[in-house]
Amino acid sequence: LRVVPLEFNRPVAGLLTDVFLGKNPAGLTLGRECRMRDSSEPGSLVTWLDVDLADRSVRQHVKGCMSVERLGMQFDGVLRFTLDQESVLRKLRLEGVDPTEDIADDEPLVQFDATFALYSGLIQRLIRAVEQELGRS
Image 1: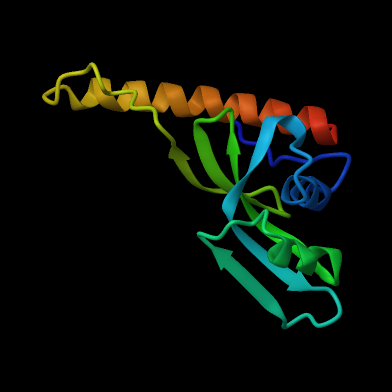
Image 2: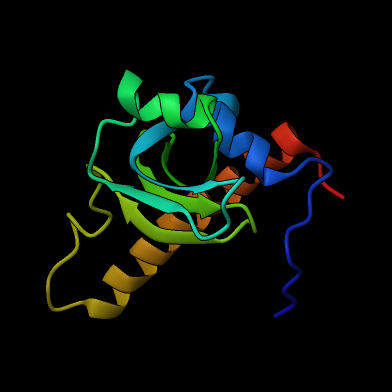
């Protein structure tokens, strides 16, 4: 298995800010989790969990002096995750889709295969969409 770290022509921080401010590039929509850092004070960190990030009182922090460091997003209406400035994907979850719905409970390997195939396809599409948005090095 050959693994290569993702590298883009533009910083991921710009993509995080665009999604946070509602521009929805690459088919990404805003989730309900965000971590921001104050650029003037390195130790200053704010984490928002299960909050409406589109609320004006939350957005004013980015328009002020804070930058988005990690952001919860949704892709294609079914894949929920967080992405940080280092291009690390975390907390991958399927929304409203059960790939094992029609598979018997006594077939765990088939259930695993179905789940793996769905996640793999969605992640591949997500990476392509981000590559198109940021350009690949």
